[in-house]
Length: 368
Length: 128
Image (cartoon, rainbow over all chains, first blue to last red; front, side, top):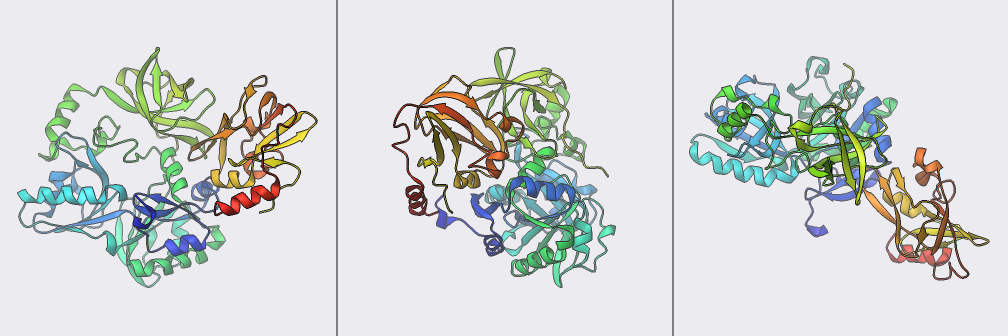
């Protein structure tokens, strides 16, 4: 993709103005960092950071059979949602693998609001539209251009965001959302995030986004709020072992293999991939996503081979220096018999085998 | 961006500073800015032969790994051990405490490299 074909979010000028280093990501020109990945990472763990995640896709499912449709295409049980609640789920292929991972928000009985990965949005939209052939009274609407999304993340997120909204944020529990005004503009305020910290994701009209961005930086100054790029978004989600589509999960991996069995509700009735997943549940999985710590010197990266007993046994899906934990960690798929904590493995780094050890996931869990 | 004039530069953004027959090698301010936060540095052991223009190590930032190209040919006689515990020195003091290796070189080993003014012009040409 050449540079002129890349899209910009409504906050592009804000990023340039703030000294953000712009890189192509999922078809958008996005800031990877402003002052530095590690400093931004710590700001979110210790105080509060501000992310432009307007590149994410938003898709409405509306109509009389909206719930039935969402149940058909996703593996989690959307019937458990009441209006104002959100759920992490998987958009499934017939093979029980991921088309995408997503958030399903229930607005009302006939309206579900899906938030999907930017890189998958067009694919997801086409896939969803194709599934409507079996469903009358369901409409799939790509709303991605109608929303900007700003994530306010960190232990002090509530304190900062509360200054700009009359909505009592303390009443919004994790994975719930309300519609209300933020800085005088109508918005959806959800207590969700992709950092492993407390925080909010605010969906609002693109024209209102730059105003809110600047106001948040202004009112969050006492807390040391920082604009944060995609670089630390990745290290934050990595430490919390939240999967990244295209790395840790994709259309060759199932939720059970990815350790996401908790989002598969086999007893909710039929859905795409149900039979494959039911069989896998009964028979057991052959490979599993595990976390590992480097015990030798080096950093594992996506795609590096994993070795055990002189043989290649798997592949690294994500790997990085973990800023909060101060060590090099990784995730990857290995045969289940090698998945136990404490198992010694080797990571092939530029032709050299470097020692590593399977450790528990998540690597980081915030104190509640 | 003013470049120190006491050393010479490669087009791949390394520097070499000569004292007697020993060249100290590091990466430039521009290079460290491009890399971002350095978290791991992998360098050749003392005694290794390095060749000008050839990869001699790797610098890993949080996001990516980048090769370091030796600006000079010779034998590595010392490696900056500080970087094992403090790789961030490459960011903080690229022209000082963040040096990478010391190489014993022959006569004229730096002749092919750019002086500070030429390196600055090269950066400008590249649009930086």
